[in-house]
Image (cartoon, rainbow, N blue to C red):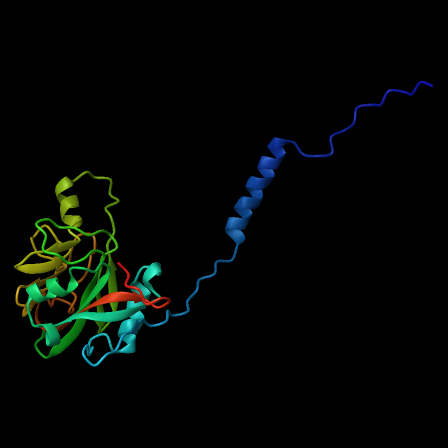
Amino acid sequence: KMYPKAGKVAKLYPNRKMLRRALKYHETWAVENMPIYVDETPPKPLGYILSDDKPIKLAKPTIVRSNLAKWLPVSLKTTKLDLIYSTEIHGRSLASFYNQCNRYKNTILLIEAIVGNVTATIGMFASHAWNVNPASYGDGECFLFRVDPDPKCFNWTPDFSGIDNFESQAIREQYMVAKSEFLAMGANAEGTNGIRLDQDLINGESYSALGFDNEPLPGHDQNKFDIGVVEAYRLIREVDGKVIG
């Protein structure tokens, strides 16, 4: 028995061009209409390790540790502060500071800046260990801050202008400067620093630095200050108690 030949069957599925067009349309629609969720839950304050032989002062207020938790890189937010240097314990000198801090990366330095009758707590986060070094070092994870009063964080940003200015770039990349005579973070074309502490940890200064674009940390137009208490902290992981860095 002879069967008639089947006619041409119409395609019931879209071709590749139609699929690409549909996917592109829906992708654009999703981007434009997808609700954006921003987690505004304040971070948990950093904890701290308390012991009789290492009394802490500057990091004790909860507001200080809350702001530090907000500003630290994500990988360092669930950590505890462990005091490794204090002017009230180890003496007031950069030599003592370097001796206590030269083994640890990711340290937080808190400084009591005194201008007349006004006191501010300022500081810096260092991604690398503090060691006397003939050249500047560190990286863009370093940042400057003021935690009290009027808390503010000044993160480092690269130059996106597209202009090749090697001198400006060299100044911008002076993240950490560690000399026997002074300690500093950030720099500018005038030769001053985002923050700079002298050899005896008695006098300090703060000016706007390239990359950090900070205001004077003790307050508006308050470039020079006397140094009160200075404390440095390493970071300890909460989950296993190990030192980070």
